[in-house]
Length: 67
Image (cartoon, rainbow, N blue to C red):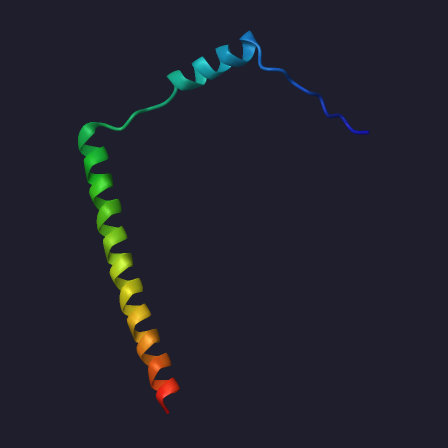
């Protein structure tokens, strides 16, 4: 039912992987450093925002419970 053809990993597969691997353009050291710093900075900022929202939500729930 259908045209499903099962392919097996053989020498042709690995040859294709090797060819595709050669096409990869690796970033330079400075670009990698800048992107890493951006990721860490954004992660810290998002963590702080989530902590603030958590604190506000907790304070709101505590206020509602205390009524």
